[in-house]
Image 1 (spheres, rainbow, N blue to C red):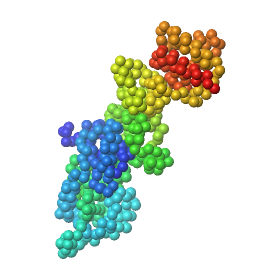
Image 2: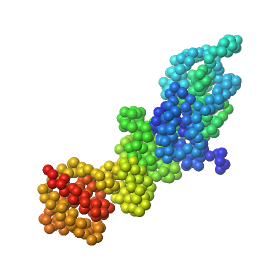
Image 3: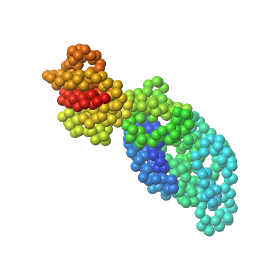
Image 4: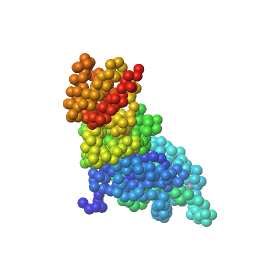
Length: 487
Ligand SMILES: [Zn+2]
């Protein structure tokens, strides 16, 4: 297959906010499709709306995409640097009779190019009185031009007939041209509308498949008209369903965090987030859910995209994250844990060198009980630092027996006397003491756990003792004694 016949897709965010979960899902679908097909994924920043754009947000969007692992092959292109292209296209359309100059006040067409869904869009078109400039007599037009009046450029939508396009998700679509207003292409300020900028760029960048949110379905007939007027073949459209909150309204801040950056900060693994996002509105056709990125790429097709809206289910996302924490090859997980410990100020360079094996083993021991990356630095802090607190609930529950100060002191001595430090030796020492003192082993096990890691929930005690080492276990037991004795 020639390189030219490979798909070219794009993700085209506007820097008017953060990278939203919905945008990230659109970017991911484009990327998965490009990778599956051996095509090209292009990043284009649609930043022509100078009033709403915040250039400083561009970096945040790019960071979000990088964190998500959605790496673009071309770009980022910035529409603000390509204005001449849109203006030239608009003039070309005027010259060919597909568009006309409009001298009406901007207020009369403000919002006419806004995204308006389905029937409402048709009603709006019917309500908006047609601009008289389209049929202006040549002499009058010459006079307006001579006066140098500000002029917008509008598309001259055919008054009759039907505009059709194919959607890979929603099937063939058609709209009566009578329902489409003479939409604005270029504002009198010289700034292109979304329709013009997107279509001119999609043609120029040889985009073959337009994968984007279903909220753009209503724009598509206008864009199909523009493709035809510009003499370019229309691409394949694939509109992906919306993402809703658990209450089935459109996902918004009311449902919790909606920016990708907040999930990165919370300590989700990028691959877990990717897996979760990929299944919002797409499926393999089977019940399989745990799909590593290589498998997502291998299986991604447009035909797997659903027409029904997807529900953003936070507990499900957490489930994916704990699955990845448990199932990732250990070597892949370690850099994330390292970064987390660095952030918390707990990292020691030896864990990357002489004590690497210890570090790997400890992370492996901890990971079945973690939900998010920060758990390694909070819940499991005592494994990486001597500076930790005793959980109040655990103390109240497991340190209440008045014999414990005496017992834990004896246990520290027995452990200190061990020649070999291993699971069975620790196990035997503790059980022998319990038997000699006439107490249940469980009493000592629970109390010791709180003393050496500060928590009631931790990996099995004797494995924990082995990774902490003899010196640390004995000194932590002795350090705990005054706390255990305190009422
Ligand atoms: Zn007009």
